[in-house]
Image (cartoon, rainbow, N blue to C red):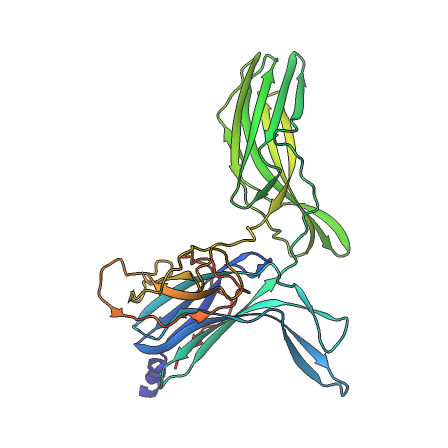
Length: 397
């Protein structure tokens, strides 16, 4: 009886890693967090996240024996989550984020066999370096790297040079719509603004003006090319109405977000379109579709000209998952004060946010930042709660 109760008491805690989703495209931001739960105080020599873009392939040699060949597609990188400290009993969440480089290759040629390519994955290894007297712990999680679909569609040059016209012919008149879009190309976070002019010579009221974006995927499945319509953006409705025998001018805006396919198939192309619609009361509608050139995230990332410095903060255990009081901010520290990131120009440090409750805790002096190569750009921290990665927890003993 006593022996059965003593085993759980020797377990100091668990280590988990949580990721936003299972697959990403090159250039996308990966958001995740490390969760540590300790049942009694434990001394830690540091928590790190190792990043590797690699491929592992089983290759048969001349004797028919299989051997695993591992190839690094990019230089490995390391993020410091927290330096040496003592974890008091409780749950801790350490959010972090990094950006997959645009040059991340989806496949790599196997060195030992010419002409054979293996798919790459982005591996994260969370290391809990234990102090003397306890064992090191680690959790691993892999992110699939997918081919970035091409954007072959050429945009219409509509800003100040071309106006799109559309008519709705009714029995007793015509509703004429002119539309001008502010830009031909858009990036995630931009605002799409359309200027419209509606001339209503009918006896009916144009009661609804709306605009949204739609996305269509051309995918390859089972050797066939198939078009799939995605969700796009929600419809934005304007309160403007155009009465009989009148003309109205105005603008309508919607935010743009680049949409990636959610289907598990090889995507060939993605088409983004802006749909403007003017609804004529119970009689019909005027619809104008504008193809646009769309991009995911900005390729360039900048940092302040004056680098920030690591700070000492109070370190306390967090409350249950989803409302952790202990969070980590990831900061970029420029090595030479440059305003633009370049190879060898920055390091990465993690700092702790002060506990808002005002409780006193152990004061930490943060260690020196780890040199960090810019194959994976750390952008910012996030407190968003994600589903835990589907890997079992590591148990401290």
